[in-house]
Length: 161
Image (tube, rainbow, N blue to C red):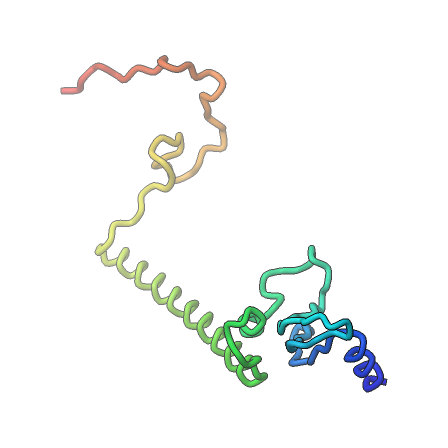
């Protein structure tokens, strides 16, 4: 059946060669430069048939990086399964190393705070915030948004000596 379909496609349509399938189920095709039965020249191109064809369900990472590079012509040969597995394991190693480095950095910060090499952060937030410098943030909301009048605030002119 596939031979008959291929013959009909070559006779009346465009030939496309299946190059590979990724782990997500996307299928990749190469359409070589060819003439259709009407004599129209079709230039060579690469295409993907998504496993999830609806556009609104597409998410970043739906096409692996290596296949994306092949589709865009940044690489000549399609990626092999071994290459994809190798790159996936490398990415996982990088993530684990980043987590370890983050833990080491946090431990170093704690050690520096304990030894007094670095000052501990006293307050979080902006100095103009009502809860600045307080350990507990007040549950009572404080705001002058509705009562504020431009030019109404004056600095304290009394100097402390």
